[in-house]
Image (cartoon, rainbow, N blue to C red; front, side, top):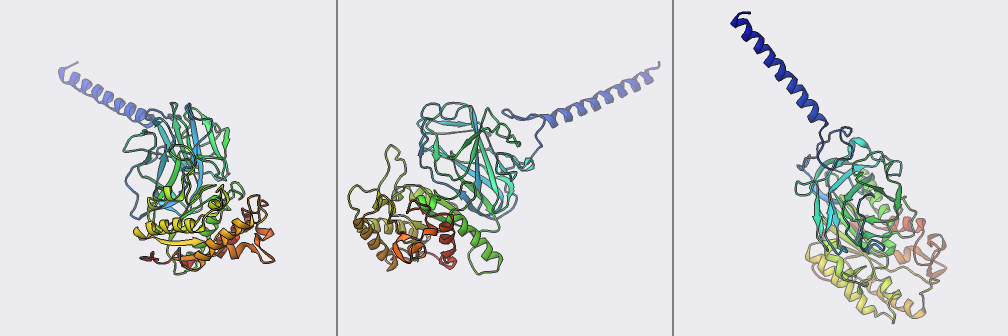
Length: 444
């Protein structure tokens, strides 16, 4: 072999090695996953760039108020388990982000893996595999939330249609409790052993729960909404007696009506609707503990209303528990003063305030003639226009015309305080959508 031929052969061998190396590199890269992945080599690649897919307005698609620490999780939390929350989006968008809360935790909460996906639509834990997105926090796949704190995720590109169910999943490897939760979700969510955060099948999610855990908000970058309506209330707003998994809370009805009206060309503001009701909530009194469980309306208004992205209107339906749960006879003037304080805070941020009259509850165990007189005095102030910018009269809409101190039987869930699904439907239907127009008054 001549020297020239030797160089030619050597060059061919080098080219072959380079080509093989490139093939190996591409193959390995295609199957590589970041640490913590549960499905290495099988999960399709998804663009999770924090850059929004398009311009738009950040609005609330769903939210819930942290209500307390979950009993039984004081020491271990939910270490070593994946929590898959199921939530319902009131409006759609092209990007999404979430808020996680450790408000009631007594130690830092480590979240090492989180995801968001559209539900497969079967009411279970299965996700639409193509929609699965890994979430990051300041660019990292994990985050540590200090005791009493919360964290906002980075935005991720994901088209979320309005009215869709969304799965938000978190994994924490280490003990941290109590778990911050919302107990009366009226929605089944799921739990799996181990890190199954990006499992689209839902098969490992054998645990079922009536709670929302850690998750307190889902925001979307939206072209179909320009702002957020925040509904602030107690168990009636929470929808405690509505059918589980059916989205029959009166706030769901309101969101649906608003979307339908806009599709019909109505001249109304384009808003998403979020529900910040807590069962048992009062205007004035906190629950027990530090931080207080079931914090008063006055105490939580800044967190649950004023901090919501794109908040334009707040609807307030509070006061009945101040009457029912006060061991003494409640002072109607204190209740209305507390409500006016909320209104002033909302007006300071330019929010319009719609307020609800308190519905009848004769027949409930807590009803007395004296408490009835307190309710009527509060309602008289509300109807006179001395509390809110405008009023939705739920009392008049749901009371029995033949026994006006009671709920109409068809609207009564059976406890003579909380509405049935039909009652919630009536609440959503009687709401005048034009009340959402405009800003708050300068002073009442």
